[in-house]
Amino acid sequence: MEEVMQQVVNNRKKAVIKALILAAFIIGAILLVRFTPVKQFLTVDALGRFLDMAGFWAPVAFILVYATGVCLFVPGTLITGLGAAIFGAYWGFVWVWIGAMLGSGAAFFIGRTLGREFAASLIGDKLKKYDDAIERNGFATVLYLRLVYFPFTPMNFGMGLTKVHFWDYFSGTGLGIIVGTFIFTFFVGTLKEVWASGNWAELLSFKVFFSIGLFAFSLFIPKIIKKIKGEEN
Image 1 (spheres, helix red, strand yellow):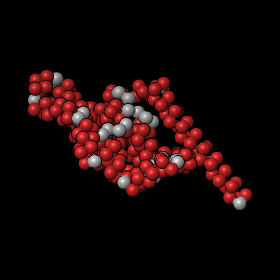
Image 2 (cartoon, one colour):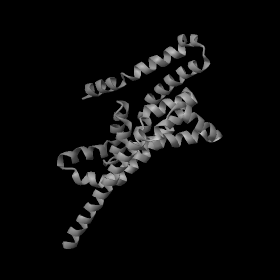
Image 3 (tube, one colour):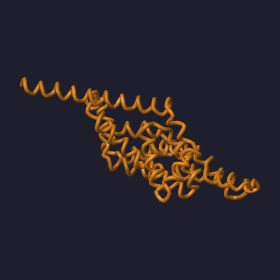
Image 4 (cartoon, one colour):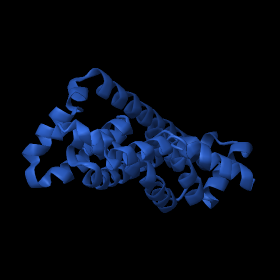
């Protein structure tokens, strides 16, 4: 009995230490991006020069930058906009989506490895009900939260603290971010093409109006999803 109690205490200590490491990582990541020269790298010119040096491997380099940025709490809209401005509307979407998936997966594993044990020890009977529900309906839950634009990076780490299965989380994320990612990259990429061409008459083209319409529509997606969900309930 005494050995069992000692094992419980040791496990508790390990969980607390891991949770403290996770907290330190998150705080350090936020401070790194906001108060060091790293943020100067996150501009079209600076990132563009870096990717030019990468040459043929520029897409791979961007994907790794995006994934790292996700784990360091860099705003997803910022890196997505940079990807669209550098690679254009279509290839920008492809590389952004891959980078977002890689980063979301990495952040999930960081949260799961360092924080799940501690989170589980804090869950009471009431919260356990929701934790079990997420485990059973992981894909639908993640898909819904992605469609209503729940903050991307906090959700990546947060889902790692729950019982959701990784592949439910990963597939829900992959499907859930497609629409919003495409709309935003298409919008930014289209405007960048007009800016680069210097032909301001193209601002009146169908493609520009279509991109603006898609972007405006994306702002209403969360309300539409919530309304549909409310009617189903």
